Length: 394
Image (tube, helix red, strand yellow):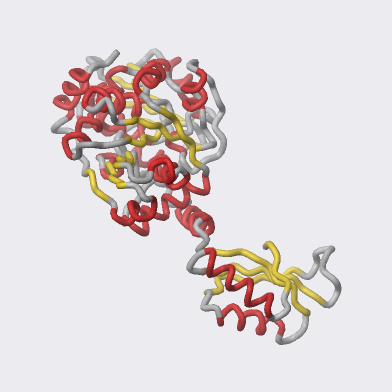
C-alpha cells in the first residue's frame, strides 16, 4: 500500500507544475451549519480540478510518448494538459454523453478526443482495449492516488486539530490519496466520503467490503458518476476511511448556489457534494472543525441557469403554486395585487382552462414567485386564502 513517503515524493514531482491551492475558512457556511467549515479549493487548480496532481505524477514516470485515458471530463483535461507540458501525445476516450464544454476544453489542451459509448465504463473498456498507447487510469493506480494525496499534505500544513475531512468520491482515487495522508499525519481525524445518490458504487462497496457495481443515474455531479469503484482505492478505503455519505440532487444544486452566492466560487456538482452532505447532516457535524474538499469547478455553463433555479427552489427562494380564479376580467389583477402586497416578486404566470377538473367559467393560474424563504411563501399562501382563493400545487 502507498506510504506517506510516496505522497511526499509525489509532491516533489509536481511542485513546479501545479498550484498549491488555498484552504479558506467560511464564516457564512459555518454559521449556517453550526460547524467550523474550511474549504480546500481545488476548483482553483490548473485545469479546474484536483485531477492534474495525479496526472503529472503518472505521466512524469511514463517513458513512452503516446498516452491514452478515459474520462467524463476532469481526468481528460488533466491528462491532456500534463501530456502537453511533458511533450507527450494524448488520446482521450470520453462517453458520447460527456459535456461539450469538457470535450472542447480537452481538445484545447492538445489531446485527440475519441467519443465512445454512453457511459463512462464503456469509454474506459474501450481505452483499455487499445494497445497503441500507455493507459493512464483515472483513479485505480498507485501513482495517481499518491498525486491526489498531496492535497492531504497541504491541508495539514495549513490547519491543525481537524475533526473530519469530507471528500467527493467517484472511483475513489481522491479519497484514497487524502485518507492515506490524513491518517499518517492525524489518525484521529475522520475521513468521510460523499457520493451523489445517483451513483453509489463506492458507498455500497465500502459497506459490503466488496466491489459492487451500480450504473449511475442522471446527475449534475457528473464528475463522480462512476459505476465501479477501483480495486486499489477500495482497499485503501477499507483501512483508512471512516464512513460514507450520499447527497441528493436537490441539495447538490443548493450547494452550488451557496458557493456562488456566499463565496463567489464556481463549483461543479462533484465539487459541491461535501457541502451538500454537510447541509443534510448538520447535526452530526455541529461544533466540529471540518475541511470540505472542493474538488473541481468545471461546471457545464449550459446547465447553470437550471442548476441555479433548482437550487433556489430547493432552498425555498422560488415558489411554484396554482390559484383557481373566475375566468372574468379583473380576477388575475386581484390575485397579483395580493401577491404584490406580500412583497413577493412574480416571475412567471400562465393559465390552464382545459384541465378536466376545472369547471367551465373558471381557470387555474400557475405562478412562479421569488420569495425570501419558505416562511415568506407561507405568508403569500395565507394572504391569498384569507381573500377566499384556493391555493394548490403548480
